Length: 346
Image 1 (tube, rainbow, N blue to C red):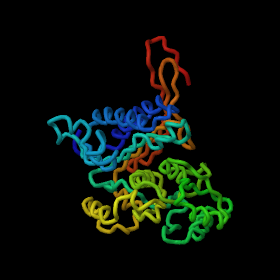
Image 2 (cartoon, rainbow, N blue to C red; image 1 turned 180 degrees about the vertical axis):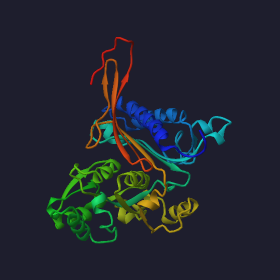
Image 3 (spheres, helix red, strand yellow; image 1 turned 90 degrees about the vertical axis):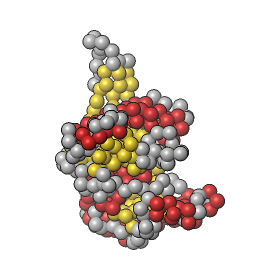
Image 4 (cartoon, rainbow, N blue to C red; image 1 turned 120 degrees about the vertical axis):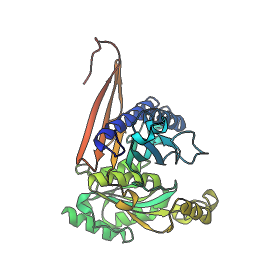
């Protein structure tokens, strides 16, 4: 195969990875056990990852090695990690979220997805599992926003780029106490808000796709999700700006419930992040030239339908994108089980 990344081929392998995780998670939908939903998604994703022809390294995963039995940061996956022919396979950095929206899946709510992003070695930021302040917009508003600008100014610039009034904009915000001031400022500017309980990655992607009636995502969410969002933005020509957040006051939590700032900063330095206050742009979070992004719906959402089960199989709906081949594919797959007389439902 050689050691260069062949995005077209690997994208189909990563599609299989996401489908397996989504199907496993969907079987637990609505059962109220978020940890179990996440566990089965992780196990299914890892099993298929080890069949992919690559030397994969997890840079965004389920946590540190001591905290996660599978898909931990630094873990090696793929055929190259399981054979003695490592030089036959390309080196790939991987960011995964086997089940984005664990609560959504456990409750049977919308917008739970299984996600993977990949790039050549060094093509994705090795981000810590802490919080990140973000603003995400689509191609039309790229270059028109500034994470340090007042909310009103950003909304006016987005509206101007879209040729509409601020009152016609819809902004997605995670429904958290820490966003009280942000919500007030968005409403004061005249825009509408869609509050979500979880899943700011799928929300960020929606902001970059025309026709979803979502025009921006704002607020503090997870840093790993920020890297995954950046990978999607590279494929969709959207934009994310972000800054790491570990100040308990900004997070709206008791300082005893988060690690001390000096401990977080030491961890950032160990991961190669020298400036904890740096503003990250899309190319900082996902600098890779050959980026692959794949996602499969677990439950129904704005972009993807959830997994459907029927007597002779199941049906999945996925999104696959690459920067190398400028294509955005929505893939509807019927997974057939049973013999030659199986009735296929479309």
